[in-house]
Amino acid sequence: MGEGERYQEFDPPPGLRPFVRRIWTYAAPAPAPTVQRIAPDGCPELVVDIGAPYEEQGEDGRFRLQPRALFAGQMTRPLGLRATGPVELVAVRFEPDGARNWLGRPLVEATDRRLDMVPRLAGLSLPAGDPLAQVEIMARRLEAERAASGWSLDPEVRAEIESAGRDEPSPARSPREHRALQRRFRDRVGVPPRMLRSVLRFRRVFDHAAGPEAAGWLEAGLEAGYFDQPQLARDFRRFLGCTATGWAREQVGLGRRIASQSYKTGPLSPP
Image (cartoon, rainbow, N blue to C red; front, side, top):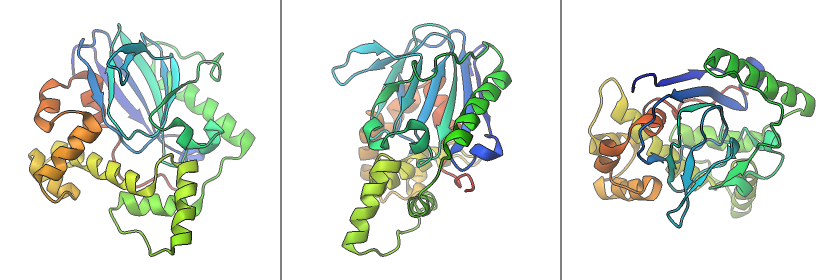
């Protein structure tokens, strides 16, 4: 990491574990002035900036300041961020289907969008420089909301997500059952099952490339389930907007932290 840069992950309290995978914090007093490429990961997130907010690159190429508190829905394309000053943030990484009750609306409405949560989180105060306190306050806020509104899961949606995470085939379904599951995925996850599987496969490439026996990009892709190099290259363009070597050469700061350490596609939190 760079000088003063800090990245930490924390397990959620037991009551949140069916819905929240991790709570993480990041700080960079002097972030690199480069564009950080963030790939889809299969998990929606709630992000609160304590330091300077990032600028987000739009489809027109222009950069616009993000709100200080935002909900990031499922992603199906790359996200470009640029620091505007010293960075410090705390983020809640929900399970793929874990944010429906917190958001209070279908997750498909947040897909490839960052929703302004500043009014929703008015009054939330997170102390700078104290990640343990930041995580405790955020977890306490979410736990109170969960207890008040009775969050729930769809067992069939969760089972399909678990099979995708294990890279196992979906059970046989009739066309009618398949359409029903698609609708429920749009509501609770934000993307179809097939798209989620594609995203999770792409994320596994980084796990293999960054593991204790780190593999080259092609080997990591084959271990993640890709057939060949052209198929892997297409997904790098699709999900990161660049080549694998280009990403490895350019990325520092937050972009590298969350690719190498965060968003692991391991087992879901227990229901």
